[in-house]
Length: 216
Image 1 (spheres, rainbow, N blue to C red):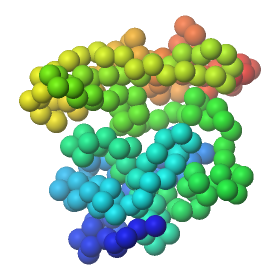
Image 2 (image 1 turned 120 degrees about the horizontal axis):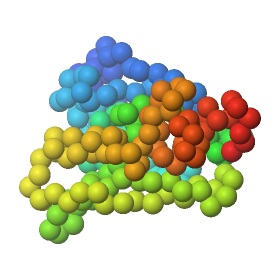
Image 3 (image 1 turned 180 degrees about the vertical axis):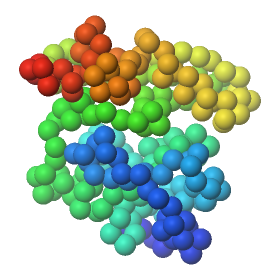
């Protein structure tokens, strides 16, 4: 899939860093690096290499750029380089397209029951949108029109001047996790979740509710 192998400095970077296994997403085995925990320049260089030398592939309805080397796939979620905080990798066997071909995809409703880290919540449930006169910070909410039928909606929570720097944008996105309109912490598992993944007003998430016999 890749058109250029990783240069030696990036090879050493990915081999020397301790990748974190995404234990909250066992149905999609993968690891990740977080920008703030590694060398920022090497992190950004790796991102650029992925985007310049990878090819487009699918994850359900999303189109992402994947870079393959030595049996592993590397990708980000497509945000601008200065705002991307996570680089992911998995084995090629665990890719969406390979599992689709082999008939080994997890249940369709997996994403509505997955607990994820705060960094992943920021990446998946907040975003920056740039227009000709402002930068909008948006957050996603989830509603349900029926069992196993979630719908997502983006809401603008803040508008910033075009000259706002990337660090301020990252901080504003992070602040959204404390907004009770969109996120809550489960009283049983103590994981932060989007409100759409919570079980009504009982203070527990859908995954914990299933432990009490609730079916989603």
